Length: 365
Image (cartoon, rainbow, N blue to C red; front, side, top):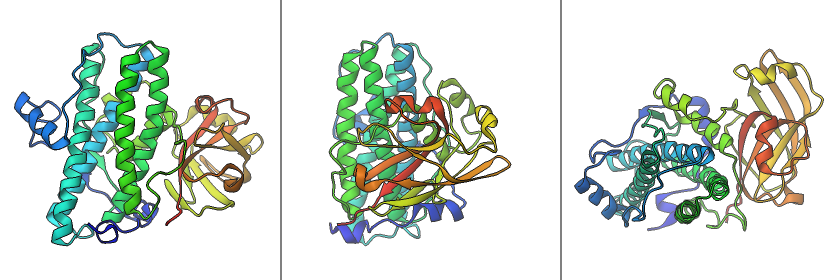
């Protein structure tokens, strides 16, 4: 398959987000997912290239591990719906997803495999929660604000980068709560998701391996980013039962996902803080406001907010993006924070007003 033929370099996700009224999608219903029979699970395993883990499921989960698995399950359900919709668009030749027949057959095989693998991830996470007697989320309805194949692959590369960062955070929690067997299991998923992202990056014209140490993502930031894709009201009970905060979205250069050049530059940020009670005491103020970047495994990088402007509940500002000094290749994320000097990425959410602002540095080969 020629890379340039099947998946050309991605267009701007932000333009799609800004101007497209997305359709609503759910998980596939033709194979019993997310409650397949034994024979249906066998078919999923054959398509995925592997069966579910064979070890005993944990009978207990600590509070942090419970939330981590709920986040993982919720995300995997979203990914299943995404790849199911992508497969249907390619198979049906929906406008914007047309692929020549030879490449289409190969593309369908690849996406079918990824879809089944994500189904296996979801089934494993849901089974773990149920085994421990914890709340397991159900599928929602989802919206994917893209209308072209290249944009869809860019979106997949972006949310997979977020997932790879969030699973790091999950492994820290599992280790701290005495779940070493879960660390091994989730580490295997991290490797598998990394294989996927290398594929996406190749087809986007990027080097397959983004950077030596992938960017970590606190659970609350990953959870907040997921809300962009959930149809409001389609799973309100499930969202309320997962005990993670949802931060107001932070736009970067006007988009939920900003594509930027690999250079030092000034970025524009904006957020509507209406839904955040904790932010109200900062309305109208500009002192002690920072944009805090997380990139790779570096300590958080905070830069002063400049040209801060308030209009009722909305704040807009600018901040330097210190690419050269910090070698911020690939995926980084930003948070609007009160103060600076964070000891770790885990400390950032406690002083965050809006996040995450997702930033993708494009360095096409």
